[in-house]
Image (cartoon, rainbow over all chains, first blue to last red; front, side):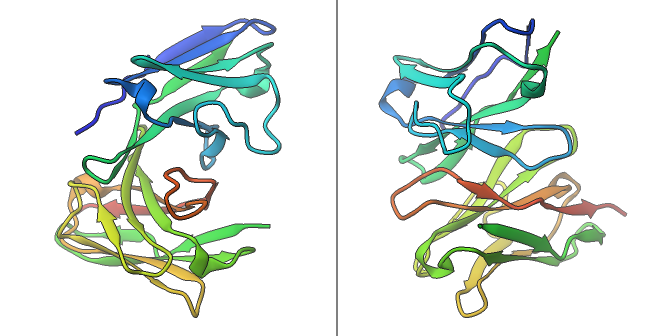
Length: 108
Length: 120
């Protein structure tokens, strides 16, 4: 089955840039989607098809995908961005939806 | 406004059964595939199952195939998940999630979740 690998944690100072990675075999050939989950809340879609932002998501959030790594970038990080972030793809070989293990973003 | 409300969670003994429901509103329910995603305590997200809008096709994670059954009643705008032969490792919050359309493979709206606890 297809595996997505994310760093378990990332710490960033306010105002700096957070770069959250999601690694997978030839992930650049797949569409990657990202979710933000704050403590005690349901996940929220923050990026779809690699780099499309849903309405209501700040322009500070951007995404890219190439080769073996997809990236979610959050510019000018704010305290309110602190959350767990998950990448997700669809594995057409197995008809399975696959999530990465998640990255806990801490704003220092 | 899209709204998804799960119900039916609770505590059950290993080997037992439970049925989760998800009441949907704010969109034309039968147009959209729907899914269940779960999250064990302190763990990450795990996709469980998806059903197409017309109910023609269903998909399951290997960990639940043969034990769980997804279904929908489009006349009631409700999604279901029948959980059978439950194990301790099925303990999780179960989220209902909407898929934005056929041939789309992500989740654009999520419910608040229903907690299922499997314990003796």
